[in-house]
Image 1 (tube, one colour):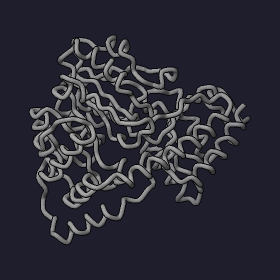
Image 2 (image 1 turned 135 degrees about the vertical axis):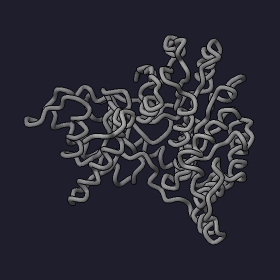
Image 3 (image 1 turned 30 degrees about the horizontal axis):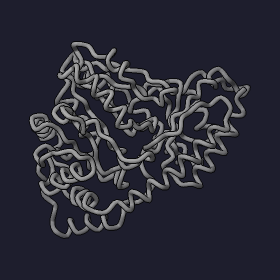
Image 4 (image 1 turned 60 degrees about the horizontal axis):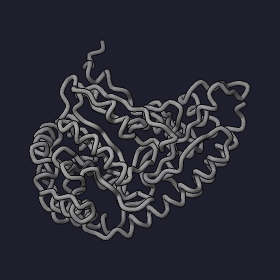
Length: 397
């Protein structure tokens, strides 16, 4: 008997998590697989941050934490926004959560009612549309183009807005494309939004520090936007702290209070120990983050150059994050004599089973012509993966 609620039953499985599990299953069988499916830095959390967590344990941070996070951590987040982004928030406008995904869920559940439309430029992170669905909203997907580096134009935004539009979800630097919106491009979007004052923006900036083109630009910086923007961020990507599960949001006070209320009923406050580690990360210098970004830039260059040597593959060089999102549709319909590739899912399974390289199908990101590869792994793994991919694609005729 199936008694699962309709709301949960309607959710799709995360394609990234599903491929990661398939990879682990193969690895458990003794198959050497290079995993390019997972989206997390392969670096260890810096020692000084780990030491802060150890100290917190010794200092008996073992009780429930405040629902929106410790005040000193929220103050550090507010200070970070002021110093690095030119954004003015009070600690009361900050809610610390169990990862940026949790912060995103808080914002969507607090904003979206049944039937509300949420504009989601594609390619998008797999969770956006699922959270909108769970909240009872409707995702209005804008399919962007490789020719425009998968960035939404002001004309596309204007055309997608209707009287039912509640919010726009924006991600820069982007997962899965690595595209980064410039200040000029964001200003053009803001000029459109000025004509629609009831539309909110949920700005996912979790990849802020992994930026290869200069200073990070937030859409919340423009006049009138702080009052209608939720900024999502966290420590997972910039400080190699994915497993610590600390994200945060900044929002207008009334919305921050709503997110706090929602979080209070679902999870209460995040891990006390992780919060002390996150505080240490935020008040420390950025040397580790800068060194990690240099490594990601080097890996990006190697991977993009290697993929460009595969006939038929089309891609742009990402400006941030640690993903490439090549168009592989030229291989649909091709065969190695035994197996025919029908779509992105077929190709990803073929690459997993033949090349022993794990990638993620683009369908889950709203773009079935592409696959996603993460270069957040060692240089040695990337050399092995690119060589194997080149050999495997050459088998398809």
